[in-house]
Image (cartoon, rainbow, N blue to C red; front, top):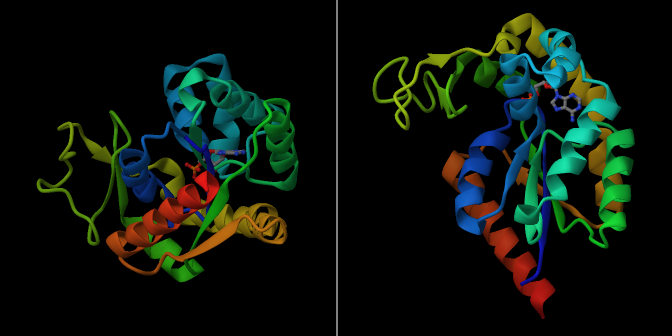
Amino acid sequence: MAQLNLILLGPPGAGKGTQAERLVDDFDLPYYATGDILRAAVKEESELGRKAGEYMERGDLVPDEVVVEVVVDRIDRTEAEDGFLLDGFPRNPEQARALDDELSRLGRELTAVLLIEVDDDEVVRRLAGRRVCVKNGHLYHVELDPPKREGVCDQDGSKLVQRDDDRSDTVKHRLEVYRDQTSPLAQVYEERGLLRRFDGSRSTSEVHDHIRATLATLRLESEL
Ligand code: AMP
């Protein structure tokens, strides 16, 4: 079967994680979210966590060599042979180059880059209300997607909390970092004919339907 080697791109709060939860079910792909991997490492107090923690707290990017190693290790796994869904990586041109190098070393190439677009005001509104479950990172929003019981995850019953870096001063900084370092990647991938744009201001299911249809077409085309 044709590979689906995918990147989810978009500002914090665009709904990448929410869409990923659904796409992983649809297409049976391993999902690698560098933010989730790094947060878990911080919690475990591993060496990776110690290297990453202070940058994350400020909303800055963790150094490239640290993150690249995490991703290279994942996409080389047997589970990722038929494809993968990357979220939160690459975050700057240097990381994009490192990913290209690794894929060409493996004789593979990117299938598509899915850009979910939302404006800054909407990002701030979404992140202020975002809650995550402490156990497995399931995502909620206090108004837009509330859990059945306040403060409790529907899926595993664990407690819902606000991420430290979702507080408003850090959010503004994360948006600047996105605008300066990450958003230029959209043009890079557009020029390579890989970029697919999605309107992240639409409902979760509308965005999901649109992405799913796009991926189904891409898979069909690559099998022809
Ligand atoms: P996220 O969950 O994607 O919003 O990521 C949370 C934080 O983890 C970011 O603000 C960065 O500090 C760090 N991080 C995640 N992915 C990367 C990456 N590809 N490069 C550098 N830092 C990252």
